[in-house]
Amino acid sequence: MSSIKILAKQFALHNRLFSNVLEGINDKQGGERLSDQVNHLQWIAGHLTNSRYNYTPMLGLQLSFPYKKEYTDETQPPPNNRAISTSVNYPSLTEIQEYWNKLGNSFVESVANLNEEQQSAPLPFRVPIGGNTMLDLFAFLASHEAYHIGQMSIIRKHLGLSAMSYK
Image (tube, rainbow, N blue to C red; front, side, top):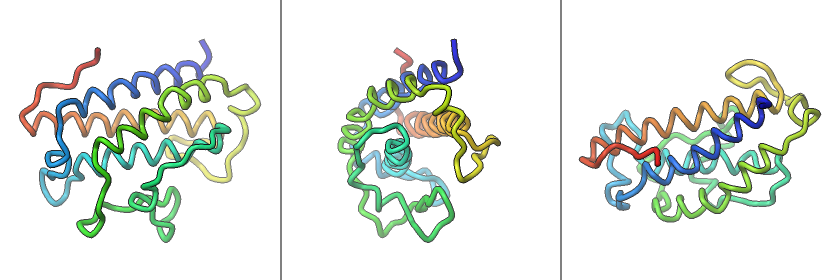
């Protein structure tokens, strides 16, 4: 199986885990922080969703996340992430999940269908795992999503809920 197909399988798993980790969490809980140094679920979920939408043009998808400005700061170096702020009114978990799900399957299919030429296309920047190809970028993005879904699962347990399901 090619590397890109393996990454697409990871993104498909993340589609399911994202929904599972948020199951049973209401919007009030989604805005709770473990401490001032820890992001809340609304920020993490929105950040992940915004990250996926940021790369849709590279996949030929014409979809946009209407809350991009809540998670993006153009004055910051790429990828222009905005830190969590008490002055920002973040969208509800329900809205974030709706946009995650709207993109989910088409994102996975588009990644899976990247041909060899597209995968090896150079990017104008290096990705944190090293390299500067589309394949490198999507490998990093899969790791990034797994990292944040793990954070979300810890917050879920802190809220007194059962562990995230893999089913």
